[in-house]
Length: 123
Image (cartoon, rainbow, N blue to C red; front, side, top):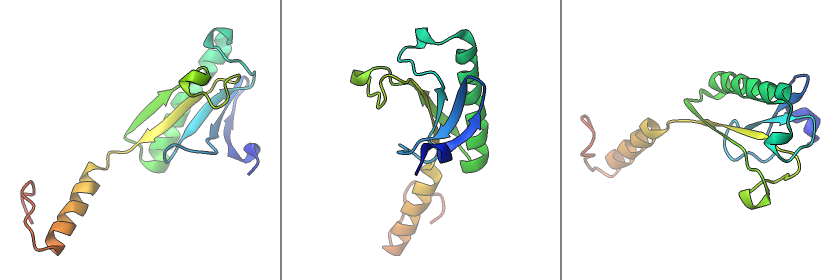
C-alpha cells in the first residue's frame, strides 16, 4: 500500500495519516512535512498545526471507533523506539473501555459451565 492512501487530512505544514503498522485500532499519526528529529527544530506554526491535527484525530476516532480515551505521544530517538528517527511524528491511539464486554463474556462462559459468577448480580 502506498503511503499516499493512508493520508486522512492535509494542512499547510503537516498532515494526519493512518499508521501502516498500527499498534491498536484507530492508530493515527500527525506528521510535519519537514523532516526534523527534534521538537525544537519545529516552527511555531508547525507545532500549532500538529496539535490541531491531534485534536482533529480525536474527533475522528470518537466518531469512527467510539474511542473513550486516547494514548498520545512521541518517540524521539532510536533508543526511545522511534521507527523513523529523523522524522518526528505524534502518535494518536484510540483507547476503548472493554471491561463490560470482558465481564459479559466471563458471565457467558460461567453460565455455559453451569457456574455462578459471584461479582454478577444476576446470573
